[in-house]
Image (cartoon, rainbow, N blue to C red; front, top):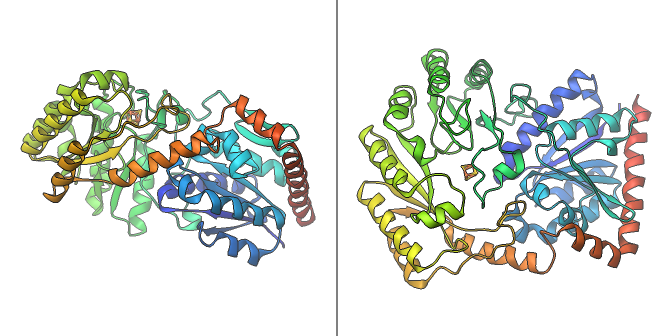
Length: 467
Ligand code: SF4
């Protein structure tokens, strides 16, 4: 039986979201008894053109995009999509970048579809409609190319009220990763895409569901059980901690997973914690049940003024308190700071450097970042402040002493590249600008629309032939 090929681009940076997307898609296809019509091919951006050429037939190409990938991938993505179109493929992007910049993703990067927000359900519906000869473009939460430019259908509702229906990994394709226990973040820090991508109403995976997937990882020889959460200790709550739910989760994991040789990691990547949540009470609850000896704590700046402007919803004192309490309970800490923030002035920098010195005196390490304006956030049009040479030289010295680490120098260049792409209307284009681009390139848009529909029809008829 000929099958529809789904070519999936997986890179280190977004392998978790791809694995969750595919896990859910395969589950839905199995439920609809459609899984036999598809074959999945995993590849990466370097090899994808070769993979498509060797297929030489209509296909669906999917990718999840981070804005930080765009400067280095921009030309490659365009040429891959050109190959895909020529071979009768349709292409779909999702993830934080496609959500924050659907117009740019379609008009400039060249994808046929951009899935907005959490894409599992919408993408599965799209594929099912495609397979059953329905109208795949009727699904919500998707931007598509249309004759006039780009048509966006936003889905306002947060469809998943619990993470339980979504498998945390894709066992069928051998993609295993940490278990997502919380999605959405109530804090809405202005530089961060999480709340704008997944909303401010957090959803959770139930304890029973977490434990059952953790056990499955154990049976596959994966002993280190880690969790994906935007705020590691914020389980089954929003802002005010629910220590009884957290304790019940950890106790159950201790009983059913640690007793079988599993190791449980919470409060360290990818489930970092907020400083105000590192309290005596929390650490008393957590300490006996986790195997990590380190906590990753988000501070971003030592300046109260900047914390307020960034909507961090905690104070500068919370950071030093957290480090001291963590020390007392035997945890080492890595504390995240970000430089080049909008509004950052010399006084803010001085205060932050003092706090950093204090964190180091208390035995902490600094994880250093540079601010990057990300599409979809309130700071998407902000420009990074230059980090003064005096501050840079202090940070470099701390790196030399092993007290500071991170990709902040690379991110400084990356942020400049992203601003350049934004200023040239390649990314972060709004509706008005998108209409102008579409009008200017109307012939091209029309041709792409024709090719897209033609390819969509080819894929649908390919499937009808199989049924
Ligand atoms: S708390 Fe963390 S995940 Fe939540 S919005 Fe702030 S930076 Fe993002």
